[in-house]
Length: 306
Image (cartoon, rainbow, N blue to C red):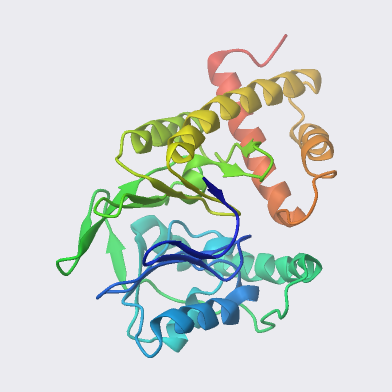
């Protein structure tokens, strides 16, 4: 099943806020959140969390990575529930401690508000991004136990970013993998989401595919259940390979010119895409990173010339 709306996915597990950048909530004796979306949706996340938890506090917020559209409301949520522990990888903590990174996260969240207003959202939280620190650093393959109900396994899945952590709850067969497995745009086309290393991205997906899960949580728009969950990873690997081949051809046509290649890809894949879609500044940053990664890979393999 392909679920493109917020609400209860299965008993006790929810997508909250806005499907464009959801916060996931696993309720139980120890309530747990995953990711913190856009700053613009901060109060929407808070409202939905309170509707479910009432006067209880989330115990943990697990961040997959330190990109602006996954940490945007973390500082706000921490101000609402100060006892909540924010957790992610050591590299994510290092990024969040850099003034330049915080400035970029803030700027991209402000830019995103302009686009989000065109989505027909009832209200946009206008305050700026609130910086925050991690309360808990997770090492690869760390396990966090939530009483006797279930446990969470933190899995290092580099490729989209170097700081990326995916989260698997085996007792519930839930895998929060976000962009580690690509982003389906709703039409079946899966964004090739490697920004730092294509080969690491593929290795991470192959590792995740071996896990026992029935619910796959993407970073944007979709939750996949049943056979669609496993099929997504297989399709993502195939489409990432096709994307690399396409970019290689354009790079060869453009004689390695990164900017001209980015503009050609944007014209084909972003300009005509319907809303909701990634804000243009973020799309350009990500596409430029992918193209540079592919060009460097081509040079290493000695195929930078026709």
